[in-house]
Length: 541
Image (cartoon, rainbow, N blue to C red; front, side, top):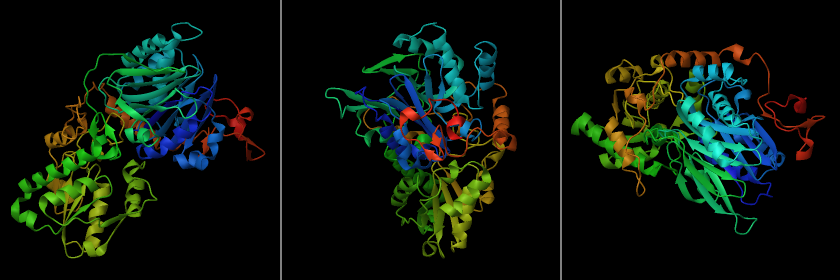
């Protein structure tokens, strides 16, 4: 799961689109910390800066934004699920033909082998990375190229998208840019990955309007955009230079089922996704989990609990409500180090395990001699949970109960979250008692799936069309068809991404690519920097 955005300023003579896009990446940084990138357009020329690392590193605390002049552009934050962590897979991706296309993708495709075969043997398009996002871009480019035109119109753009939906199976929310023409947003036919659109008055041209798309509404609101709407499943929106949004239903909606993990863990609590408040959904999760605990432990078991402690930060809201419902003290007894990554998002088990103690430390007095209930948003591999339980015991807890806001995760996530293969999931082929033993807890209590769904649907801010969710990780019933051999191929790609061969060829260093230098000094004026290409090695020599 990644973060994407796209901006078109109403003033086509403006050169500051990258300023707002760069700012928005900080509001979406939680969605991906592996790589960041921005691509903008001024006139018909495209400028790009991208690389491995968080936004502050890639853009040198904003200093590189002067290299990115343009009135429109797109941005991306990568959370790696398919392919490798190479800098070559930092997005946005770009192809020069036809028309100069750039794209940022949030999601995962499940039929990459089939798409690669089509692009190689029929479309004759070269693929430079292992990223499925590059495949999607090239399918779109091929569709546009089939019209044989020197210039595309809006209908051509929407027609070419039909190829994308026909050939690319999985979940995706994308922002794209056609050089000198406009920006595009579109969403998979089940609405699994989120995308919203907002507007604000132009600050530099009276009567003009700026339009901005992003994965979460918080990025829009913090930049002064309102009239926020969600792009619907199977729907696309194109905003032409100097124009207004034009919507088109590209394919029939199959369902309206956002990934429930957005509400459980991934999204910021101050966002609304598809009309549902993330904050209220987590409040509801706490209330429903309290009911499950009462039913499971009984009055005596609840009475033995001394304190409710959240595992920071996504479970904080649910834990506070759970404590209130159980009439128990609530304590933020784990102190979070705010200068480390989210451990779940770190690539590799070893990094995650080391990251837990770097991220969290207990306040000993809150644990010593007590029966504690730890509340977490989910239990995936058990690595984090086991370390946290161990820290609680080291701090003096006499009994540790772990309560999960979501049900047992027993199937891989196939739509853009790195939720391992079956063998790495702690709940796979284990009873709840066995899970408790594995993570060294005295008891583990899971939320029921129906209760989790209700917690989210009951969080509607006004009317919402969402009545169900993508919940395949809990039950194995995915909203889209899963090709035969997909899980085997996915595990091979994950293994390949961790092998030394994936790093054999240096295409870019760990910093931003396409950053020009002369005699070791960065050139900041756009006219002195090279035009876009994948890795402008000559500029960095």
